[in-house]
Image (cartoon, rainbow, N blue to C red; front, side, top):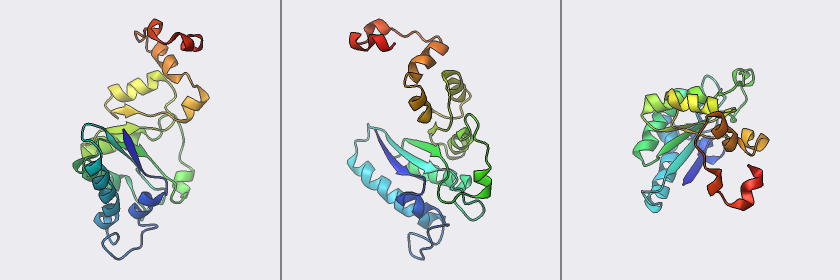
Length: 189
């Protein structure tokens, strides 16, 4: 699996947002021009990456710039274009071009970025991965069962609880066969 990082103010994200991309050539001017670089990167990688191996693309679903920035509806259109170009999953994050008053004051509660994955999934017809304060297995399972995303990614919570997956399996009463695991890992379980 390869994930292209097109979010958080890095190079690809800087092409997408009108707050940074003031170009007047084929890589700017309008949404199609601003998406061009991202789609060219995807095309090159897809041409060299086996079709049977997944290709993900991480996007800032909203760039934090508010009015005049890259917004969720832009990401819906991008998601559709990415999927048509061979991206299998859009990883839906947000922010970090400019911290707007709106984004700075946004409540960061459990699953606060899940609505982005939900909208891009249903608006663009592309599988999505939800991120952002997904704290436990019950919450993750609910997101999946409700059809709000196709995959879940955890970051900070895995650092806080390195055994998150084991704890989620226990919470969900999954049929996990720890006896099949390498015995050297046994004391961790």
